[in-house]
Image (cartoon, rainbow, N blue to C red; front, side, top):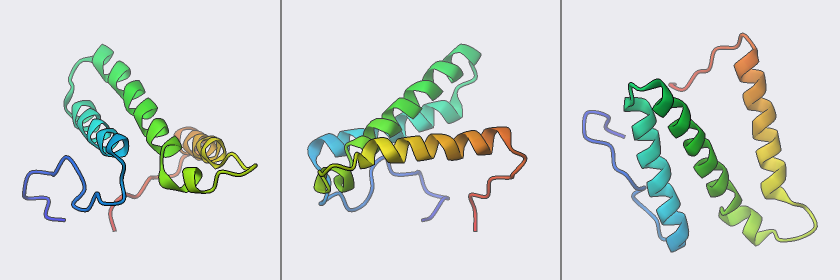
Length: 100
């Protein structure tokens, strides 16, 4: 990805996404952009909360849990797992690496 160019608001290949998933991707991208740019404390907290809600919704509406609709609630399990990992990250001293 060329970061010198303006970031795209949707992935290049969306053929495997439903219309609702495409809207979620766009909403997540726009809200993330907003969170990164806001300078208001109240807006930062409110929009960050909305971003988390949108990401959780995208996870629940992703193809894997929909295709594996059996007795295992993958969507809920993965959100619980993510919450645990996030809590460990927030309250731990580990440094998050997001670049190679």
